[in-house]
Length: 102
Image (cartoon, rainbow, N blue to C red; front, side, top):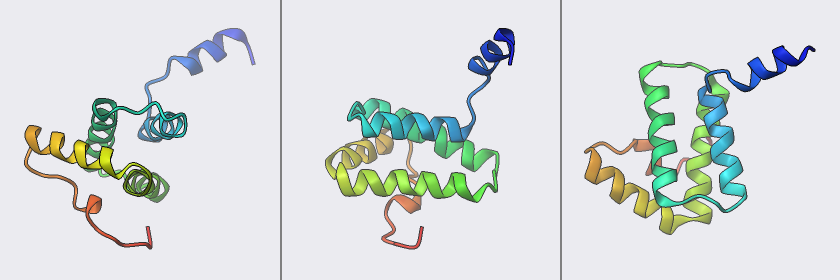
């Protein structure tokens, strides 16, 4: 692989999967803030909604991210929900379901 192709890989437009990876890395490093969590989840949710991406692994990873927040950082998830409510009236329904099959 040439150096120029490696640089090109670094500068590609991030996919929804890339954003989920960033979310997971920040979550694991305990570097998420309410604002950052809200921003990432809104962008990811909008991309999944608008593009109607039928990539099941991406949807599953998104659901797992919400479940991880609910289990490990429930206080932060509640603050994110409050912030989401002040900016728009619809919170994704999957944030409130207790379906363990996702």
